[in-house]
Length: 172
Image (tube, rainbow, N blue to C red; front, side, top):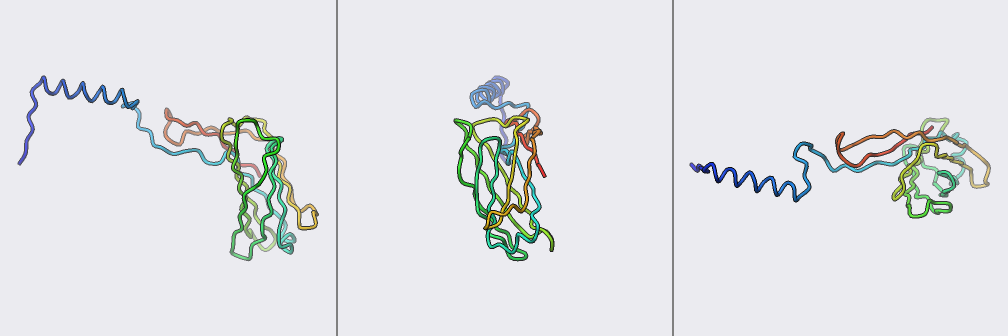
């Protein structure tokens, strides 16, 4: 059996070293934080009439204020999901970058469900931003649209006193 005996001076020295190491590392010993990041800032949900399913591809244009992106999403077979990344950054906030992804899946016999997620990097989302989605068939005939203003909710996924502070909204 192994035992360790530290004299009072040794205990004080060890405690001092641990305190210095903690201060140097930037650790706050009173708060335990995890390392989760933020999810998408905006999730846009839209029901597209099943009549759109007769088209092989749907044209989708999504905008966050003046920053507009476009994509073509293949209409999926029953039980399948189609996805697309949205191209373009016309009107984007200088110094910012966004990732915009769309998922399309059958929702019921009468509708397809479109979910678009928008993640902003380098610029903080602000309440009052306007999100629009326009879906058309291959002949540019309108199929569905969404026009909503964002009021973001704040969350701290790593704990109350831990970074980051995330802003998100779901619009439908």
